[in-house]
Image (cartoon, rainbow, N blue to C red):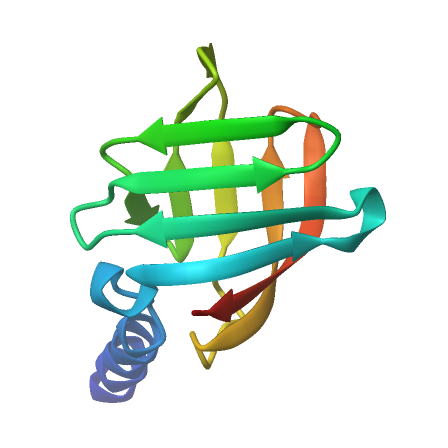
Length: 120
């Protein structure tokens, strides 16, 4: 029984030790999505606020409040040129927040795509 409790404790500590924090995520990023030749500038604040500029076939300006981390997924619903979208960025494999690739679900595309993030 003691062994079981010890192993359970280790699993909880390991899971929380790997969890991203808003302090780690906060910052300005250049974001690229090569498949559609799209570049973005994202500014994330510790309170979950997101400002995003998208340079693609058309220019989009996005802003969202109350972004949050749930099990290493950054979830936010910004408004882009008046249209509400859903974004979910999977940070579970990120070790270095200065430069990383992550799967991103966007309701604009209706699917998950890999994007590259580089801290400015």
